[in-house]
Image (cartoon, rainbow, N blue to C red; front, top):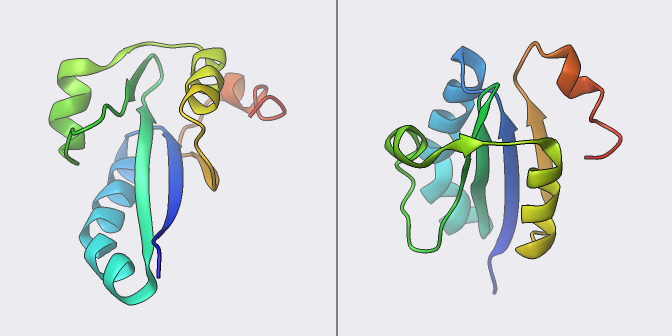
Length: 107
């Protein structure tokens, strides 16, 4: 049976966002082994920077974010999703950004 990949695009890495990542990563083995679901975070952002997952990079999100995050626009997120042909997307807004809510229709 093949693994069902779910791609979570996370906006916001404050208390709520970082806790979500930690909980998902802690449960990841269970989801893969018991449910054949691979939960991934291909894009993680704060208010101004985004980390775009690279092939072969492990889930060390805090270190990866600190080292490789770049300035972004919502259009960059959409472009990456399309280029990478990411499916089964879940966009999570863990910010208090009114500006981001204006981008919901695009997302």
